[in-house]
Image 1 (cartoon, one colour):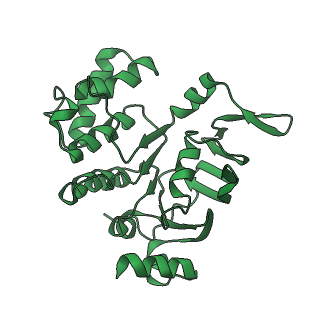
Image 2: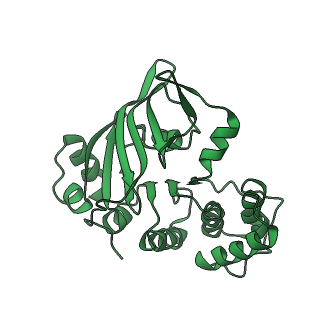
Image 3: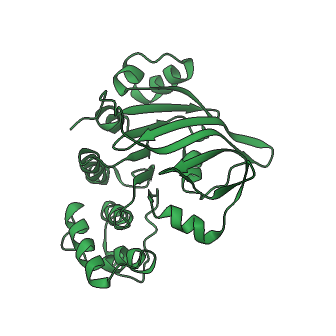
Amino acid sequence: MSGAGVEVVGAEVVIAAEGVEKWFGSRKILNGIDLMVRRGEVVVLIGSSGSGKTTFLRCIDHLETFQAGRIEVNGHPVGYHDRRGRMVEDREANIARRRRDIGMVFQRFNLFAHMNVLENIVIAPVRVRGEPRGEAERRARDLLARVGLPDKADAFPAALSGGQQQRVAIARALAMRPAVMLFDEPTSALDPEMVGEVLAVMRDLARDGMTMVVVTHEMGFARQVAHRVVVLDGGRIVEAGPPERVFGAPEHPRTQALLGAVLH
């Protein structure tokens, strides 16, 4: 399966970021990020450590605040609302409501150790979306089958490998029926032999049309699955385009240096 080079044209915009700026103290981390992601598109963010990739991803889900610009998901700002032309922090209840449209998968799996796999997946749809428990459990079992773990519903996280835990984390995010999935280096904490099983699940999601924004160092995945590769450096987007162009004929010196370091 390959999304590479196949641009998603005409689909509605799921994520719209305009002029996003973020500081940590006096240090500017994001410096005017503009990015649109359309429904069904897979966008892979690459860049050296400290380039702003993870910070930007966390801003989309309002896990990080930002000081300028705006980010909308499904046409609604996340974390802020417009008050007489100025963006101000939203109420927590509204933030939680907007986050329902966003699935987030982290480097670390963040599963509840005292709950079995089924409970880890069911808890949010039942408590946050108000789904009937029986319906949520049926969907959880379907999702476990989808990520290749149909027999792990009763297992506890400590009994699972890292790759299995990350696949459960993906199922847990999907259980909320998100409009977009955000992946923050989902394989970086895994042993090498477990990376492939997680990337295979992500490839299947892309094939099924899931909108995805992925921060990763897995350049093979980016080549094969991304519709667009976006290169960040110093908190700015310095290059973006289909993977065959970005990888085959990078234009910006920072892209050339980055790919020269990771591909050779």
